Image (tube, rainbow, N blue to C red; front, top):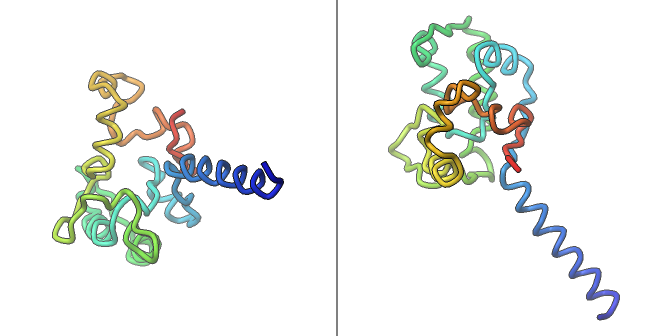
Length: 156
């Protein structure tokens, strides 16, 4: 094999490995207000996990945020909303795997409702795992994904 072929073959292997590994990664949250306010009660989820319309609705219904009053002042609410919407799954060039099966007429309110999330967890997580006291909830990503807070959901 020529040197050039060896280099190109090696580069292709590295690229395909990197892409497979990167498939379970999202950009870490860089906004300190989002980290502080959202992370006060649960892990702050990466905005790429829901579409703009979902983040918009979540942020306008904070007085009943999944059964809790998570109301914030208007300035903080607007700052968090802007960050989430600007970095949502359907913003810019990246529509991402989380948007697969999410039609324009549907505003999912939970990441765990998304077809991609359901497919990934149905094939890898036995139903009994959700009853484990260490897991507690399908929204407790860090129970299985140690580096979820930094955007890495690789569980291997």
